[in-house]
Image 1 (cartoon, rainbow, N blue to C red):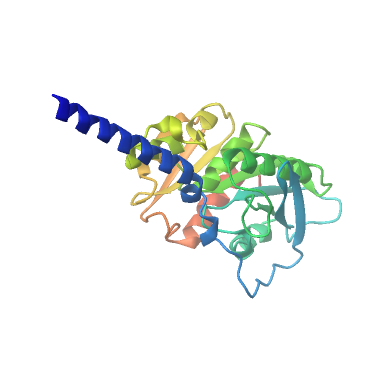
Image 2 (image 1 turned 30 degrees about the horizontal axis):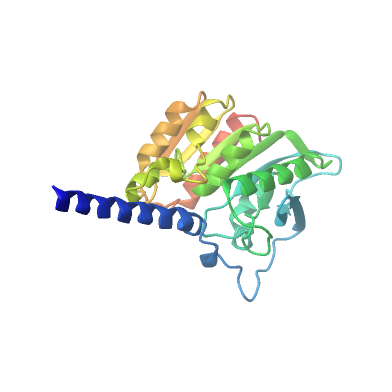
Length: 272
């Protein structure tokens, strides 16, 4: 029996060391900011873009406000607050939202702490704080209708806007390729979920959110399985799920269809 106990002891020790290493490395895995660098030559900004600095306890983050293209003097416009995926920066996003600006919506792109030219380090707490601060700056603007603020996030950015929705009111939430909780993925690493520092419990946030929720997801998503989308849509009191035949990184497969689907949702909910 002694050799068996020795083997078991070594196995337990190795597993504990493995979990400790994974615990220490998890934020580098979840937030690979080393892969998300601003372009060295810069990006030509969209017309009228306002570059802002949003303060939070870790310093400040960069944010870009893209005003609506059809706003008349004295009008208040609906606005989307967008949170990108974990391997992106806001530099590449303005062109993606030009069609929304043409419809009369403003867009606020908030950078994650530690990404791009933003200070601090990324975590659920720091990202949430930065987005809350960005929201508060936005809601104070005279050209923004604070009753028509939409929260929109892609992948881990869905976690950022769900966390924001627990802190501030929003007219609607739009999630793209988003997970129920980061703890679920711990099983893929053979580690217990309680070790996850930044769980982003989106399922819980959605369950307590009473306004409309639109969920987009690829049925062939190889990173965040489609089952996450079904669970989120089922948990939301006013949830709607639209699926596309695509994976995670090729979402959406048809930009025109995506824009039609999202425009329809914004019109039906009275945001546009």
